[in-house]
Length: 206
Image 1 (cartoon, helix red, strand yellow):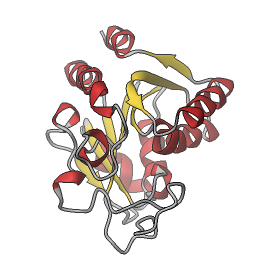
Image 2: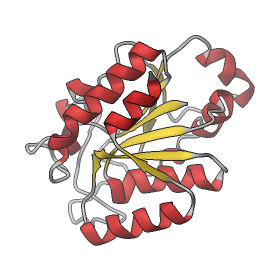
Image 3: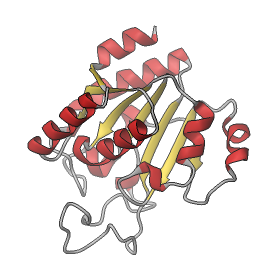
Image 4: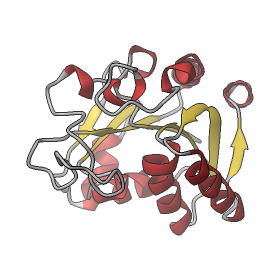
């Protein structure tokens, strides 16, 4: 099993953030329990994080909130930082510079914290995601984070296309649009995704 942490960054998670997901801060305690329990159990913690610059195609002053969004998680700003509850202590960052896939297993060997940087909502746009997933080869991916109907959805659909087993931690996630969240959950269930809670997940770690 691995823990997959989607975009738990200040700009999404806190009310003062540049692209706040409503209610996200209410999930922070559940997120903290997951991250602490994974650390204790020696479970690999993979995090994705937006790493934007103003020139990125997703960034717009006139956003449509489907393909384009206002400036957020700009590199080097406080908003791009992970919230304290999910902050990794010594992650190996994997940027958009592709590593030869054959080098990735050696690169991540012995590392428990991995950080995938990305420019769009889909983590699989980072050319190293696929090789990382192959190298870790988890029997199950326990996923949490924000936003349920955007970046969580893109990651989960990517995992399902690759035949991966996914459990979604419902109380450690929030979405932007209730109707879209409901549609995502229905589609995921159809694809075999199990829904769980942070407490159930932590009990499974032990």
